[in-house]
Image 1 (spheres, one colour):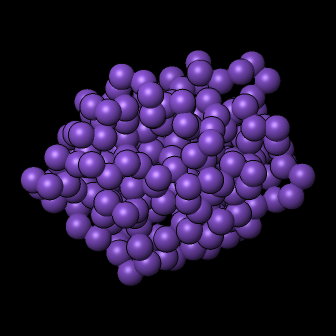
Image 2 (cartoon, rainbow, N blue to C red):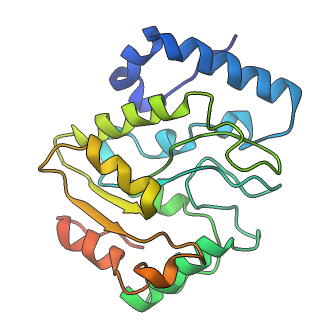
Image 3 (cartoon, helix red, strand yellow):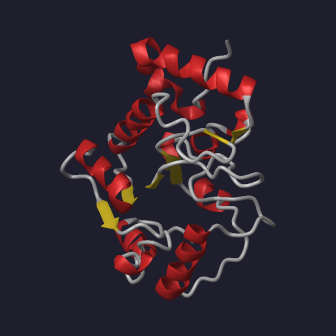
Length: 214
């Protein structure tokens, strides 16, 4: 069974490999990829960790679950490959970005954010095609909670952006001195209940010594 590769985060997450949940998670993921169509592609499971190593992490944006339709999930929360129609939440993120900073984006690939130190982390890292949250019981959250704790302990103190009730619950994991921005989720169901007008992009940049080019 092929083990997970956490790239630059390996040292910070090494202790997870010996915990009881880890072997079960690994087996569940391997069985899922062997028996069904699963997103993102297996080699992209940890794209967020690969593109945003600990020493470069300046901001953490938490998502819940990968997109579950073809040609969408790419291992970065909220991101889709360029040329793919923008999912509703990402469209709303872009609307708020334009309102906040005047930045207009068209393509859905957020790799440039990740390369600047924005860790785009989903709580669950895999999903079966057409079945949202189908892998939520695998134990992914234990691993991604460990990533959250590791990120919060970094000396540069990344800013955590928590959109919606699910992500907001993760604030309880964070040390009291962690910079946290909370708001409603950008989904169409909740964007008008506190996401629009929350100005997360300018607020993140105000907390950083070097701004992110959103």
